[in-house]
Amino acid sequence: MARKKNRNGFRHVGRSVDTEPVTLTKDVVISKAANTDIASGGFTTLAFDLNGKAIREFQGRKVNTLPDDDNTINALLFFQAGILVGDPTADRGKNLPSVADFFSNVLPTLLSAFDFCIVNEDVDHIVTIGGGTGTSFSGSRRILPGTSGFFRAIRLSTPAETNDMRVVRLA
Image (cartoon, rainbow, N blue to C red):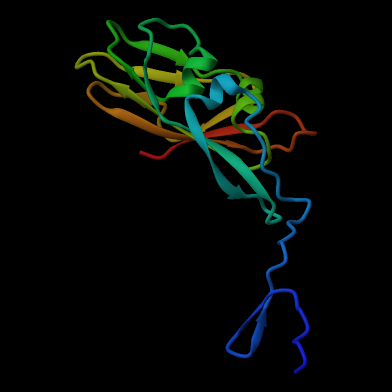
């Protein structure tokens, strides 16, 4: 009696099933987050750029306190949290971290996005967000007393171009 020839894979209802390893293209990259301080505050999600290339988007998931002052929001506090809760004792103007901070921490490529929320727990005072050079806004920048603002920062320039970012109020 002749022995059957040993074949790669196994047979299933008369058809051979391939068990060879799958090779991914060079455009798929799985890597550790560039900034571990930032990455410890949230997670990354898979997104795709205009060319269909996989990119990562960072999503902050901590709740931090928004300081009661008119200073620029601390970049580490902001990117780790994603949600900032404040109880201002007067109307406050809070600048977002610089465009360069956004690009180096959470907006690495063209059209990558970062969502964040600012909650105003006070019943009398307004919080207004602002930004530096390269930041433009769509929608209201004011968070009225007893409300919150949900925003999305979107990178509008490639890494080789000048810094350009738009912050859109979503709710």
